[in-house]
Amino acid sequence: MNACNNIVAIMKRELGGYFTSPVAYVFLVIFLLMTGFFTFTVGNFFERGEASLVSFFTWHPWLYLFLVPAAGMRLWSEERRLGTLELLLTMPITTWQAIVGKFLASWVFLILALALTFPVWITVNWLGNPDNGVIFAGYVGSALLSGAYLAISCMTSAMTRNQVISFIVSVMICLFLILAGFTPVTDLLVRWANPAFVQTIASFSVMTHFEGFQRGVLDLRDVVFFLSVIGFALFTTGVVIRGHRAG
Image (cartoon, rainbow, N blue to C red; front, side, top):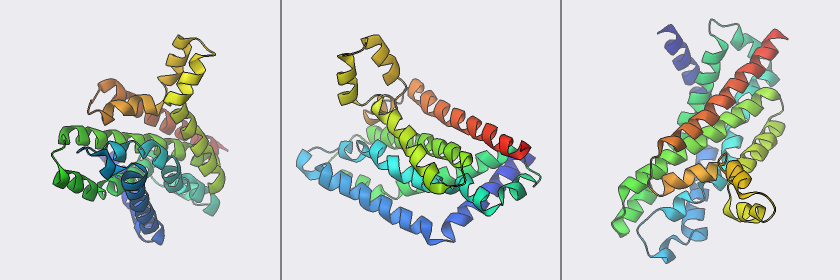
């Protein structure tokens, strides 16, 4: 119970930090504007002539590629830059409680941003009769995808006190996780490498596992993949922070 209280306390501290500055509101506005732009303009929402949110979810791996690292780059870099990391870790909490609390606070913020896209869902239901089960699965997959990107950003943020470096490194890692299963890339690699090898590499891609959610399939293997990425990244974050603590 004490562990849960500590995690909740850290979450409140982090969420308060978001909304006491204009950063959160700027992020939300940019996220909603870009979501609308990619859905209705680039995704040709109205030209498709179908009641679905395919054009909405298709762009999420690419949209999150820059926005999520931008939201997560300050998680630990800011603590190290301001010299408050040592103060945080001397509080009566464990390292993993601090990591989980900060991560969950940022993830809740991202899920809130995703929830604010509800006008898109209302629009597609007003225009037609979409399969809302498919849309729900898409939202679940999008939330897991943002969590995976955020955990990676949390890991890179713990490695450096420079937020820009954290942002760049996390973008590069997330880009690899996209391109490893991006169809044009895999089609090209098949010409030069063993198909089984290419398939193995593609299995580590967020694109491979996000596609199922877009089709409305809640496959346990896809859920486990995203949770495994989150778990591994947060575990690595803990190793890095304990290294700083020992140093």
